[in-house]
Length: 282
Image (tube, rainbow, N blue to C red; front, top):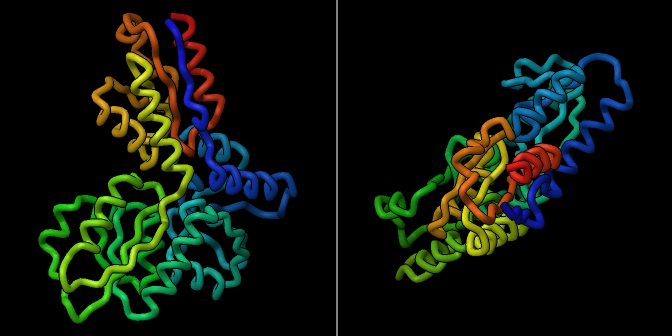
């Protein structure tokens, strides 16, 4: 069996920066617990490792004690939540991905001018909730184009289209083209999709053409990892999404001559290498 690994499989810049900030705090040996508001990234193995180092995950702002230290995860948080923490004297270490931070600022600036936000993303995703908060908490969040068919576009209103940073760039571009072609509707399109996401997805497409089967490694709660698997399947190639090497169905994969491996932006390199070693042993 021959193994082909996608060049950019694993941590993206934003995740790497977030974990570097958290590591620095741990190394400093600060007094008292270190809190993270929500999982710092969507990977259970990484979260388990930090839990063993004493990092506590606060599922809500109320779980962060007054005057303590909290790390804002790579996905960012809602505007009011951040301000509420500051009002309670909480020491905030902002590890929001720079790409997400840029998207927040763009949305805030354009909606402050009165434009209505149309956000292409997953409604229950923490990044999306944070992005919408920068539009004053209002807007339309949709993950299927069909949802727009039921939406009334007022000719008296201006709109701004943005996306969760990990959405599919090609689908977003098609969506933008469609909206801008609507007669009597003014839509400003914001470029908020991360280039690293686009690069990984295009690599996954190319990889799918060169192999017989693809393994995508990463957390099941990771949106960008799930989309990588979907991109491969859209190419008509069989694909399996696993979190760890223990989930590999070795017997089912043994018949394939060439197997591709890629990974989400929140997947540690060692988990990817574990999968590669197991495949090489077949």
